[in-house]
Length: 348
Image 1: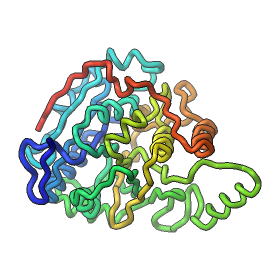
Image 2: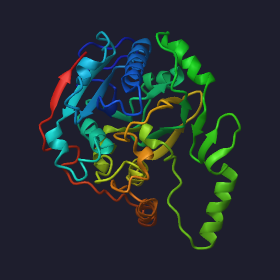
Image 3: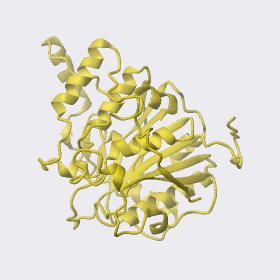
């Protein structure tokens, strides 16, 4: 039986929320260990300050043989409100998947492995270069999440050179004051000019949808799928109902959005968390020239050797779900590497 309290976390109790991320020590995007360390330090600090019984499930996929594993490469906090488990997917398992010689990390398969093994009743799939505003953490710690909801949020991009060695509150204030882009339900906005880099203002999008409907051009349900791989929070029951993210032999582009569409048609209602609840995405280093891997799927759009789910196919599946008013679940019952005994290490 899970034990929760409105005050301090009960030692030995089950967590209320599981944060699921994936990575490997391959310096993807430049200064990867710094971004991961910043994520871990901030999360642990905030969970302690807001007394949020939680766990971080880090899926280390296909660890590079010539680099320290993440348990040794990162500093881990003292035991507190947030425990940390590292679940490792070996190179041997990785090599069984198509295109494994070209893609070092299958982001959605990895997250599914973590979601499947999460211990909390609510599971947040996110990434290792994301920081959470204090207002957002306060909301999560209030323990008012609902099982019939899918929680989404705008992503705010911040420069790669976030300050080092400063208190978390100071770091978050830097992020709040230095947002470069905002990824909203309607598109991505330049924070300085207010112009849409892609997408359209809400009124234009609504008119476009209406005109398309009149002309008999159906479209998918307009959910907040923009940068949804950075923050999708569902009950564990819903994650199991939809069998996690679709496990395709492809880059993660559009797969996160397809997961949101599937969740919606499984019966949950989308709830978009509003500012000042925000997430901050630490940009990759400007001088990074590393080969796109892992969660850098967007950087690899032009890599013809690694397939991705075309937007046309995403729309086709999503429109079919809308027309039939039911989820289309692509995974089998053994999703999330159920049939594999994965090495697990509790680091704090």
